[in-house]
Length: 475
Image (cartoon, rainbow, N blue to C red):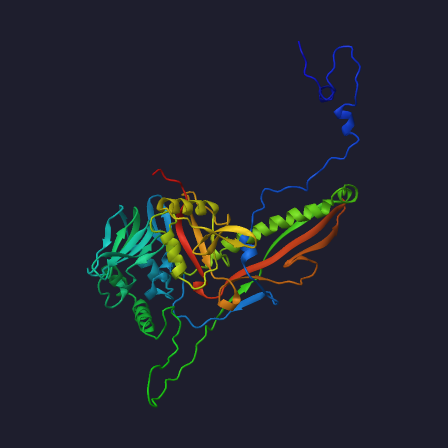
């Protein structure tokens, strides 16, 4: 029976039986050496391009107010649904996202309308509404993708847009004169749709004077002069001759502008005094603990800037600035459409898998989408606009994600990060470390805090490409 040699034995110089050791063994020699060590490594550290790219605005009072011109249309334009197995119902209060019902808050009437929606299933390529036919239904898209198709200048078919989950068609059906469909609505994928017949709406409206009055008022408000962004118009005169009477005007402001409060991410770092006192050579234990804690806080800060429901960029993009991919994966056409929706786009942000999917689509077309230099780093780019990797844009279970496009900077009415510097015990800009004392177990506590938020100064500063499929398909 043989036995394995111990490490000490295996480290000895090879020798034959009865032969004396001729040199010092490795195991013994290591007792007199000092090992070369790395600082503690951390897998969770990412490039954090969003934090590095956003221009940061100083918020001295802890709150940042965004004053805008008066906008008549408000709301996110998305309808929310409740799913019970295969059955889907619309949340009654969400019917207020329809333009003519915006601001109507009678729960009983909205509930009566919600009950009259009928669930319908459509396969890919089916027509939901035909151009020129009477508009007699409101359609809510619970799931799936619908394309709006019109006729081009020379009679060819032209795609006018995509409506996806939470969108709707036929909001004008509840008006006094709904007219006809100006486009053909055709499914791109299998769709679950909730339909409200005009007759069903009229039955509810016939029993609710408040509903009829609200819809009539909203129609009147729609006639108020406004620009293409929905802002109260500024009346001007141009191209005149002689001495005509010039129109009088003023620029109206929002009466209740939005205020962004600085959010906070915090943790308490604990270090035993024995560790802090005795084990600081060759590297300071408290310093390394603090370094890794700050890295984790910065990662969480970037995640919140993207996903927080109150101020996160994904949830603060205006409905009119959201588009859906035309075919599933991100294509050059999708990126071009996203670029065309705003001036001075400074950056795209996408999950690395979305960037890879975009690269595959470019390869299929024989297009090289290039790169650009950003602070000495070569970053993928489209039309000269860098595409920064951002892993905090999560990929869903259905292998879909979103891509952000933004204009940044306060001077060009873009997206800005918010923070306050000069806070007590500041360790990094907007981050402080405060000593909290030593407890009875000889444990030192430090409170580590970072304060931040983000603001979209005008809606078109931020755009989102939604329903981006990143799964690889067999071609």
